[in-house]
Length: 311
Image 1 (cartoon, rainbow, N blue to C red):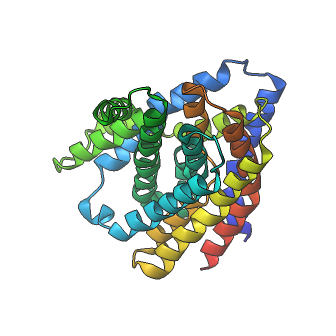
Image 2: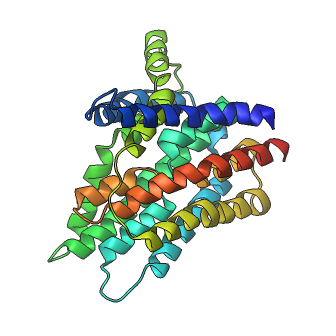
């Protein structure tokens, strides 16, 4: 238990450091966006590219992982849509609520946490979980939102817009480029390896501090019912479904099943908030869900990590 806490607590300590720094105004109002851009456009893409460029087919040939993690995401998203229905409520807002309930903080918190708890062998499944979250889930939500908000919806135009948006996402593009390079069978040149190693090493601490800076902002919105429903679905239903599939239905290496469960148990990521702001919808629900789920996950993630360590 002591070793687990020694691994988990530094993660939350970095988030807390960012939170305190943000509340005290030590880095200025623009620091959150600047540090976020550094992580999204430089540090995390370097880490993802290097990991995928060195991967082999044997390391990713685990369809059970895709079904387990993807199943948890799908069930949670659909249940959130059904529970959030009310007279007059638009599909765009329901989609954002479903996205919040199923969108784990895989990139900023999940990858650093998996590396600390499970080592480098957990990076391939962690990246796959990130891609499912940031592309499949995010893309599905965008399609539903665009379909609802467009006066004359056109499926082809909507899908093209979603495709262009996803292909411009560095968190998708970098691992895809890495995978293409891996297909050549060539090792990474030493200068490239050193460059990506140096830059990628900054991803974890900067990403965790960025979460703290984001959470230090004043959170607007007062719809507590929706917020707590999202938090419950995210921290209970999603890991429950994923854990059932990963641990008892499909046969996969322990590091893959444990990574699937841990990634599904993460708090709400920032994607739903950013999407709500982009479409000028109610963003307070997402921001509160991010805040509360992150605070509660200090206990739930620590307990889960301790259980996985003894399982």
